[in-house]
Image (cartoon, rainbow, N blue to C red; front, side, top):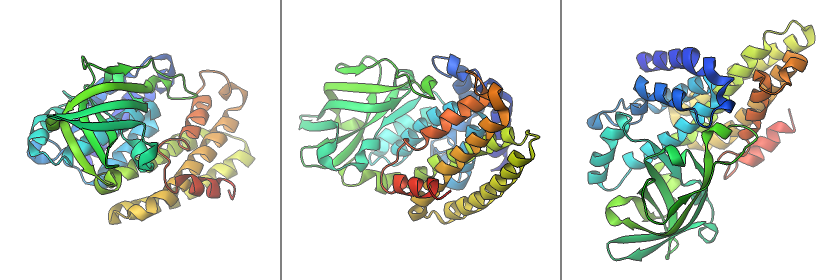
Amino acid sequence: MQDALGLARALSRDVLEAASDGVEELPYPAPQMQALSASGLFAMAVPRDFGGMELPYRDQARIFAILAEGCLTTAFVFSQHHVFCAMVTAAEDNALRKKLLPGLARAEIHGANGINFLHLPPERAPMRARKVEGGWRYSGTLPWTTAAAHSDLLAAGAVNEDGLQMVCAVPMRNTAGVAIDPPMRLAALTASETTSVHFDEVFVPDASVLLGPATEILKTHLGPTTFVATAVTLGHARRSIRLASATKAPAIAARVDALRQDLHVFERDFEEALEAQDRARVPPLRGRGNVLAMRAAYLALIACGGTGFREGGTSNRLYREAAFFSVWSVGGDVIPRTLENYFSA
């Protein structure tokens, strides 16, 4: 799908990267998201039968790396919509798929998700679902929800009275009992408008259930999207290495050359795992990608000297953004792998 990849490269270069230094001044990257919507890339994960591109998972991951190289905030917000698309595509109710997928492909529907906690034991779930006539009552808090106020629908996870997991598509506007907190101030990516969403006995009809009740929904239905976070670390590392490569200091230039070789090996290993759809390789790859991005951003900061440390500088932002990868959806074995790579680097 060279056309889609070429489209992503042009968008990343001409729109996202050109505006990336000002993204932290925005309350939300609306112009970038509008450009992304207009590009047609919202359709990349939607099946062709519903008006989508249905790109191979390998190309979807490549596109996320390309977008992250231009602007991490935009790629991150888009990744949350991407997960929503995956949830709808995997929906057990075909009527719901017919209802939502064409609008998602045309970028008429923007989705968010609050499902990451589903990797936790059931007793730690912050959102509960209680069966009632005709549907479910959701109560609790989704503590980390990106772009909730800018989304039409939220894939909201919950654990029911039997300890089973489920995901429902909940409208974000004019839904009784739903309250969205103001956006959090973060060390980086504040413009993603990540916040907490509260549910107070919210009624969700049976017709809005995407998945479940079942066990291990994330493992069963989100396999391919697990590569996206790793792809984003790759794109961010590429951007930092490009910035660092402008240095004329011999000692830093030598480190840049060595890191570029590490990046090449990482890209090769990532492509192999993508080709094989080997999810078992995701935690070690995430660990390597997290640290690669941090090392690259550190070199970019040094290469830019004091000017890079000023507020608003590119290397300053890249350095803070790189730390985000170590707290983004890091269940399972990701943190141990990250620490292993960081302290052996």
